[in-house]
Image (tube, rainbow, N blue to C red; front, side, top):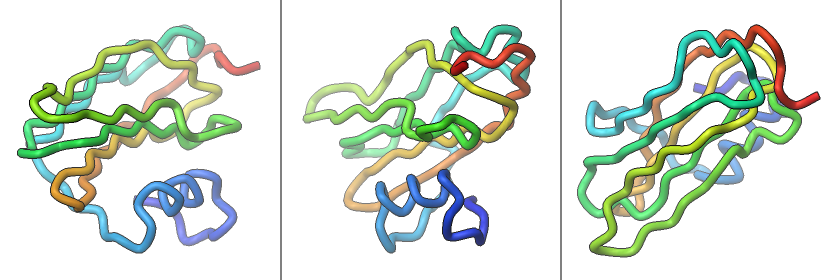
Length: 119
């Protein structure tokens, strides 16, 4: 998921969030974001986990000055679903994480940004 570069901001953000835990993958983590963002200042995102006992959703952007876009904590019986608009600085990977039962699951999408939204 992340690069081998220990100074990579995305790798640092992932380590900060998950620690030494390994990231799993699952089809139960649904992540919707456009493949091409015409305006990086307003990029729509939907994130939903159908993994039992999901208590946290996190969104990270590889090319933003600060990779953490959003983090949401859920208590039972809340449904772990969010929809929001984010700013993306440049073309790069956007990573969605879900924490359930103490384990982390991830999925990512490459988003091409036509006009950056962080500058």
